[in-house]
Image (tube, rainbow, N blue to C red):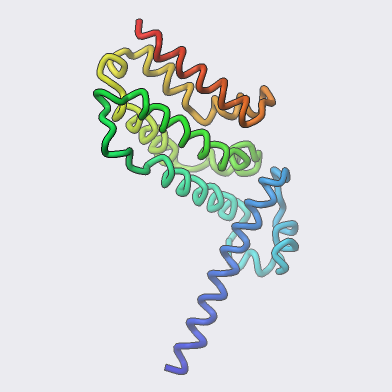
Length: 199
């Protein structure tokens, strides 16, 4: 029993340090440092770069792990069950509004990671099937709540899916420089215009 305790303690400290490295890397990116170095992250954590690289073999692995954690948390929000008293046949507009709110919240959370040049360079080297799974999940979630006359309209569905993508949110927030409130208004307006034009 006494031999086990130190082992468990070291494992806990290792896990805590690893999590702190990840959290610090993410914080630096969110604060505007789109390309944090190993030295900057290590100094912010209070460790040496040598210690950092004992937890992560290279910066690519560290940054990809940060992105994977953000994506996992984002999936958790977007995959939350819909209210059981809302039927897609009768309440699809209400369900669509829930989707819009969840996506704006999620996209804003992971926005800094999507605009970090370093993370994107490493993320794009990942197996494209991993990235594709996220797109398919997003589209499937939308198909679950829309009535058949909308999902069967290819042009309309593709327009709606594009409007509700992270890329559209990035365009509003970064390229057009809109505030969260302004971007949300534009997004809601765009969604309303798309679904009000079934032809």
